[in-house]
Image 1 (cartoon, helix red, strand yellow):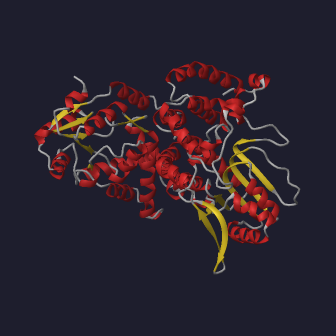
Image 2 (image 1 turned 90 degrees about the vertical axis):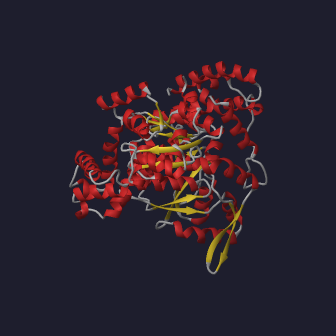
Image 3 (image 1 turned 180 degrees about the horizontal axis):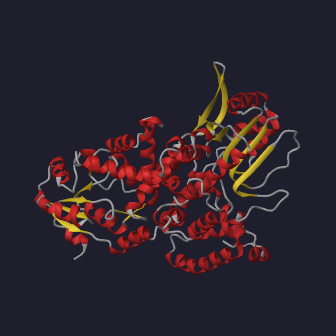
Length: 578
């Protein structure tokens, strides 16, 4: 009998989390080791006193001590016990230790979890039938951690409530958490069923409370994670491939979180090499990039090595105005003074043609350094000051060749623009008030529609996955080849849902510098050079990827797309050596 049929007779369903609703790519015993590694990486003073193995041993000892006094200790009590057993008060303040510990624990989990699609689909089916669903889990972290986990996988609307052992000093192991959940949900045990993988905690313990129980045992997953434990597989070497693959199959372009992680790694590295003390993230593309950069520094970089970041309200419109209008120029330069480092300013944006930086360098006389996801064409400027423009993922060379995988990574630049948009309008002009220069923002309804409907929640989920990568990758650089593989697959093969998403974005794009919708080149505009196509097929990816979107409402034609796309995909990989 299927799980769905077994659950069908019951009005209320209690669901276990780990190895039932959600899987980990590693064994649970490997979690503590990574937590210790991440935590000690942020605490130099503590790492000189204690190593990773000792910190893990302290955690097991702390849990054992507390369970002798409590059914299930709170997360704060657990961390305080570790802190006390290790005599860490001589090296770090407890509140700092606690916050860093929580951040590490949450990030480690976010980086290795993925939902069990079979069980999730069954539970949503039951929810549509009016069944009450409750998450009932023995876990050391508090409820807010679960809220992050569920949000990352877009299943945060699945449960009617959440019951966690560490929040209620109760556990499934002893049966007290079942009693608590029954009381709080006003449920009769005869109408409740527990679904979980543990023979003891989810099955036998539930039965003792007169709750029906169904044991879900994912044999293949258990075998895989146990092999991971005994062979000590290094998940950090597989996280890019596994995370990007899952996101590609189960989200709308959120695999770009991995590509953005590669950019942020390079941004920090390049800024350090350039001795930048402060980075100015230009609106509006810099809004989400600053969020990611700050998260990366918080999770990966020691406090003494961090670079200041600031959000700079700017637009092409106000920069172009400064070319010909002295008042506009004066306001622009006065506003930007706050972002300077000596006689230089370091700018961050998504990039492409770098018009704003080039104008700023020309009208200000300052040394300007621009760090971008990518650059296309750069103007040659006849000015005495520096105007350094670097595309960190793809860069069109002036006196040297384009960077490797340029054709692939620069495909569909509008995707980056949409993903990185901000919750506010573009800068229409600057004005002065009480001696301070301020930005007047102008919001377009189409842009607001796209942000509210798609981008806000997308950015929140991408940030959660980004946190997970911080815990497992740190500053181990994602190669451009890995990024190219992700982008190539993402632009050539898309589901109907992803194509419809792209079409909606295209139909509502708006150029906030001119007066209307931004129009990209269409398939009709393509001029094919056969020799170039054979030698550099990646240069035609931008046009090729638009074909599938046009066929989304024509099933027969869409079916014919895939064989052609697969051949083209393989040819691009061969010629680009991806």
